[in-house]
Image (tube, rainbow, N blue to C red; front, side, top):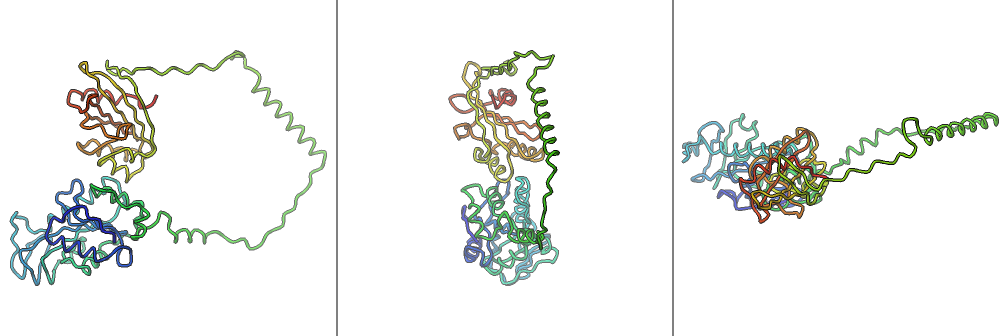
Length: 409
């Protein structure tokens, strides 16, 4: 297992979690996968001690610090926890610490679904300490995919093998996308590194072998013979072919009655030097088309594009004036896979602070006024700033006008 530490563990028992994951070691000899420690994905209500992405599932590990060591911990999800027969009293009034842990795992699962990443079962591990000899859970809670345990290499390995049970292995490429939407800093390992951690390749060797077995073997070759046509029939066939060629040439070369013989192609229309939308004049400056949409995005928008397909990104810049001051406009058009994908991406970028796409110089327009729209499989973005930098509410009408500007010339 590859361990990536993104921040400090939010609980004291988190240090034991990290130590147990470190003890597993790199590679697939023991378990495989990637563990992100000290991580808090967007929309997750609390920081997490770890998220473990395995080839067959995802484990969300939340640490719970008990007031004292325990010989026996009774830990039902929907009832009172007891330490050696004594009720565990929560300062915030929650029924038990597992409530917050399950909510965090649910948030992680919802983010994976919202970003349309590779579907994998998401399970919850509640790591308790400083020390617990025995944990008792109801069978119904175990069937829900929740484990309460004291974090040791053996207990974490057992939980991983019981909970990560997807019938289809997560590929290395999809694991890259999954890690990208879970970690908010740094760059996830590339697909080649993840192959060494047990994630599958895009093409399964077993599937290739099975397909090869379906190809029938040719046991014997049947000799073929060729019959010669009579010489007279050969000449007749050649003569007919020449006549047909001459007829087609005449039909193409001779002008028709409704078309003058000296007709010339109409000149292409000249492109306008300005575009006027609702009385506002926009001067085109530059445009660019990219096939790699994710490389030109930032924030949650980038994470979504890493996890999903995008046909092309077309961007264009314009200049206009507002109240006598010069304004810079960036418009972008993203061609997505289908209408559901466009709706999902639109919901991402329409959320404040969720990112967007860079300008043509490869940098985002800082503090820009923003608007977005959707048409079928396409999502349009508009960013507007004062030429000196930054934007404000005065520019909001311009952003809505900019959504109607063309991104190509």
